[in-house]
Figure 1 (tube, rainbow, N blue to C red):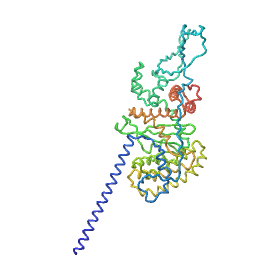
Figure 2: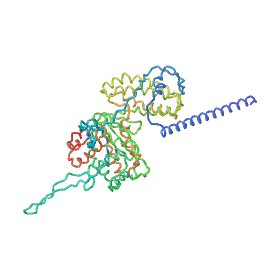
Figure 3: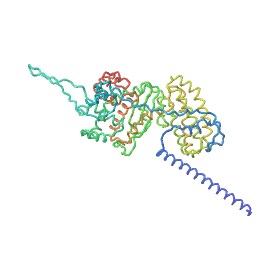
Figure 4: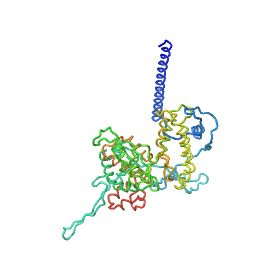
Amino acid sequence: MSEAALLEQKVKELEAQLEQKEALLHSRAQRISTLEELIKQFNRKQFSASSEKLSQDQLALGLFNEAESTDEDEAAETESTDSEPEDTVEVPAHQRRRKPRVSLPSHLPREEVLYELSESERVCPHDGTELKAIGTEDHEQLEIIPAQAKVIVHRRQKYVCPCCEQHHATAPKPKQPIEKSIAGPGMLAYVATQKYCDALPLYRQSEIFKRAGLELDRTNLANWMIRCGELAQPLINLLHEKLLEQPVIHLDETTVQVLNEPGKSAESQSYMWVMGSFSASPAVLFHYADSRRQSVPLDLLDESVGAIMVDGYEGYEKACQQYNITRIGCWAHARRKLMDAKAVQKKGKTGKADQGLAFIQKLYALEKAIKGQPPDERYRRRQQEAQPVIDKLRAWLEKSLPQVPPQTAIGKALHYLHTQWHRLVRYLDDGAYPIDNNRAENAIRPFTVGRKNWLFANSQAGAKASANLYSLIETAKANGLNPYEYLKTVFKELPNAQSVEAIDTLLPWNVSTNPNWS
């Protein structure tokens, strides 16, 4: 081989090595960029506001800058300019609103304190005539009396025959929520409301009771809540049956730690599932399970269910296939991933995240406009106005997906849109279908707030009781009832309910017709 050929071969080898090094450097650069994005995302979740709302400045940058008007090479982020957008949005002028004065409810008891002039002051300084009262100048002041406790003594009158003194009789007493316990229905409702509605752990309640002179151990309070959860089970079963009759059911799940579970370590995670319907008679049902397996939604659902609104978790798919259930995807999850991608963009620049958010915001603007309208009208408006936006979004997605690295934040967001697309667009098929699963997330939020305070459940019985009591409280709230008054009624009436019809009257949407309702 000639010297020139040797040199040419050497050059090719060096070029190949250079290409390998360049490819390695490019791969490392992408890896560094991905890690930097992750750091930004962690910092944002830890320290930034969690709101997903877009400001008016963000709307001006991206909302109406349609993706189909961009060039093919707009895969990278571009600096924002002052050029006119294709569409315009009118921002209403700011108006300062005066906050109304706080009015005190008329049903609160009033205690009057009358202030009068002294005898010497009731004389006119000009002519000495005695002054005449012509009315009062009133000022109402709110005063709070701390929780007061009282003891109810249940006296069962005993009788005996005065002749033979052989026949004895004792007046019956209504069944109590916990027989032979010192806790009455109001006490149990108070503790349950404090924990499951106001996120106040039992050990703190125990300290509060001590300040009132009541020595109530946390273990006693916990046992009471478990017994109340067991007492409510027939009502929970009926609530579940009513829920399965609804046209659309929302589902979601979150973690819960249960210390004493058979075959599991104390550090392992279990799950609290929530299913809800928010139509005419809203219902929310919590369900404890020791796993996130697909067998859980299989147990919760059945053939009567028409459609479910869920996130992208694949554990719901088997139930949908077995029961022939329509699965609707959540646009809020798709938007959230685009918001995460937008958060890691460089300041002052717009990119593909803004383009995707522009389309989704148009879908939500339509949903806001048709909120409260009948399903047939919502279906018509969606087909007329949302379908064209969906078509444009699909075309933009197919063009953009190959242009972004899959491990980046925007790559993950677009991949989620792509894989969930057939579920996301299902909400167009029926005007009764929701666009997202926010109602379920809002329903499960009180549980997540409480979990930050009480941290874990000690036993499976405690977790099941918590699920039942959360179900009653959140369903009562969804129906506009006072949770304490509702639980008090349930704990008083349910022990004496001897039929399904009697239990049915205790469902939140029926309880107002109950003659014993407070």
